[in-house]
Image 1 (cartoon, rainbow, N blue to C red):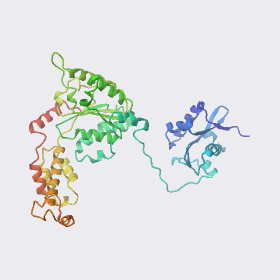
Image 2 (image 1 turned 180 degrees about the horizontal axis):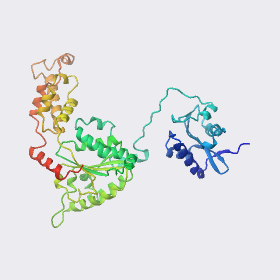
Image 3 (image 1 turned 30 degrees about the horizontal axis):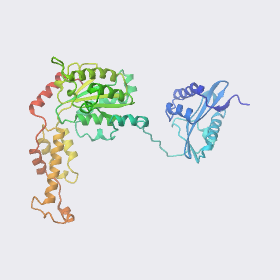
Image 4 (image 1 turned 90 degrees about the vertical axis):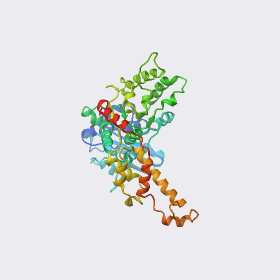
Amino acid sequence: MTSWRIRDFHPSDLDGILHLWETLKLHNVEPVYALSEVLASCEKDHAVVAVQGEHVVGAAVGRAAHDQGWIVFLATLPESRGRGIGTSLLAAVENRMAPHGLNKLSALMPESETRVEAFLGRGFALKKNLRYFERTIPVQRQELGALEQLGGRVLARDLWANVAGMHGEKELLERRLVLPLSEADLADEYGVVPPRAVVLFGPPGTGKTTFAKAIASRLEWPFVEVFPSRLASDPQGLAGALRETFLEIADLEHAVVFIDEVEEIASQRSGEPPSPLQGVTNELLKIIPAFREQPGRLLVCATNFIRALDTAFLRHGRFDYVIPIGLPDRTAREAMWQRFIPDLVIAAVDVGLLVERTEGFSPADIEYAARSASQRAFEKAVYDDDGGLPAGEAPAVRDKVRKGPSTQDYLDSISDTRTTVSEEVHRDFLEDIHTLGRV
């Protein structure tokens, strides 16, 4: 007669499940399913426990989906092994799932798991040459409604990789922002507090918005852009609408919140009587400390005119970093041109000359020049502006002589492009790095 018995899971068995889970971890066995999933299946799916007296000595948890069943969790205490408990648990949980009409019952076990006798004893076959792949969906279904109401979205996962050049800025953002947020547990071991709020500053067109989106993409967090101009029409006023928006953002588990041209609502407070925007600035200054108390969120504010920001807005305790995003250096400009020039013609284009001629260009300027050159070359090919085939010629014939943009096309476009950033603005930016930057 055995000294243990199998019965259905009761809510009072949760401590026993936790003890089994911790025992596995103690013996360097990493369960495949997260503890939260196992506990959820205990409550909603099928779970049985082996008890000796009043103590849980083993458990099996199963989940059925259509005609496929999965063993989510199987564990026994070390001192109870070799007594057939595991096999009996599997038999019991399989019986509970039988009404689903399962065609197949499967189990995923960690590679370090050596106790396979229970599965073999129940007729499971060990499948060779299989690999298990898993990824976490960044936004849970219950969050989608709140995210949609805020106008937020989950961005493509490749935005970070697609930011051409700007290696220095990318490395800084990766080290200061992405790493502590994506590896929060490891950061905590080193006493690193993950950032909660940052300011990106620099001349217009240098890619601050692109970097904010790329950070969200890199973290796989939803991206929520707050537009003060849209909130201004709210019946409760801009300050009230801003407060309400951040309360709604608190319902999201993770979020990168972006405010562009933040100087519009956080400029220097002065004058008698106070301007209407001073109330908005005051509200934002109160919102940020509350926002910082919530883990899993990052506020990114961008400004072209950092000198216009209220001094209280930039002080320590509100923003972890004040990061400059400047004009691309030679290496970054080369990466941008390599990205924008079509593959079919890039070997024939003098990229080095284009890089030299676009010193002082912002990323937006370079992209405009590249697109403009492509458009010009395209129009010349179609409309015969350079003495080629007549415009009425069959497209199939024109395709044979089409060559794409040339170096001269790009140089002409560069000459016609008005740069966004003047020398004076760039000089001011370099001064701001030393006086206001904080990295």
